[in-house]
Length: 193
Image (cartoon, rainbow, N blue to C red; front, side):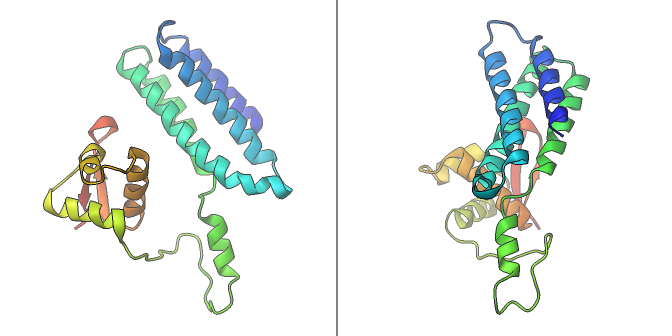
């Protein structure tokens, strides 16, 4: 398993040779690839009390993969990388993301064992949550404006980071309240009819 991650990291390093030496993205991308390799090793090797940190590491590795894929996309859009090579590496990192269990899994496992729950919650079951606060503001904005990007929502939620807004949007997507359309920097969100 670890050998696969090492090969993928080596492939990324080879691809990054096509970035200009003076471009800071080259160094940042190498750092992210190495960080992902280290984090995946920790996820696969930790047990006992150290395994409590796994969920934090998993969350970080998912974020780092998205960042690295963004760097590679920039390289592709600049003409430094071949679309085919970029697609292959992107697909491998997406598979890696699939291997990292969702952060909510331990909570679901705990809920299965709680007294008073006759039917256990299974992975894949839809669980409804009340939508309040930031998510309600996002839905309200989308109701009055047909579509929005993250930057538009930052005007409604000025004290909230992009990362938190994206996390809220991902949760609304999972709840099937909104839909996403477009790619890369042209992503829009709409109310799901």
